[in-house]
Amino acid sequence: MSKELVLMDHDGGVDDYLSVMLLMTMDHVETLGIVVTPADCYIKPAVSATRKILDLMGRSEIPVAESTVRGLNPFPRIFRRDSFSIDLFPILNERETISTPLVEETGQEFMVRVLREAPEPVTILETGPLTTVATALDMAPDIEGKIKRILWMGGALNVPGNVDKIMEGGQDGSMEWNVYWDPPAAHRVWETSIPIIMCPLDITNNVPVTAEFVRQLARQRRYPLSDLAGQCYALVIHQDYFFWDVLTTAYLGRPDLFELREWETEIVTEGPSQGRTRVVPGGRKVTALDKVDVESFYAYMLEQWAR
Image (tube, rainbow, N blue to C red; front, side, top):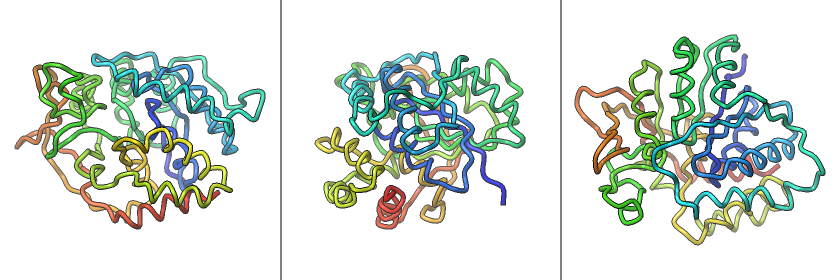
């Protein structure tokens, strides 16, 4: 049976690196490349850490590309600085050099080329804002037909967003960060006919990173992936942290754990709700991950990282 072709685009948050690790454990997937978008990170350490993770996992054949896009509403610096910490983890710095290649072209150019050259339509796994995808579509509208679907961590449909109303003055708190970083980019993708599967806050709010899960990871830290995952979660366990990007990625590996639901939606691009993913009759149809078997998901994660 042929493998599913996947092109990943992430934005360098803690759970983005964990999603890279999870994706690399999936034998039924052929990853054509990884793009790093400069949103929830500082781009240089984020690209470096991504390449080092691929080296650690023996996947240095997968090229990495650095996107040069920019959003409208920057992520807080306190979020973005985790990219420096992860890039300096000892487990990722046992080698003198990095083998995983960094391509010379920009991430958006790389995305266009990979999609055009792919022998069949490709799934885009998007765990950051949609800006690089939207930019690639503007550069080469023909690639729309080469995208099988977009699996995206983003949006808040029927729950509050996670953008702090105080930190982001004038906003109403209805938006999720990956949309808020660049609402026009999300709107651009919404204008296409590409099938979109969302992993919104509605479902991720039910799947927290718990102290017990981290303790279970610690018990299997003899495995390099569990050790690295535990170190990543140690950076964020003191705050409310959820399996945002990792839950999205898990759908590729274990779709049987999920229930899906269709919604009609629109992206709000201006005003105090800028970045909101609003449910509206007659809006753009998307499919959302709606429910998940939480305990089976936790077990799946521990199993995948026991290597």
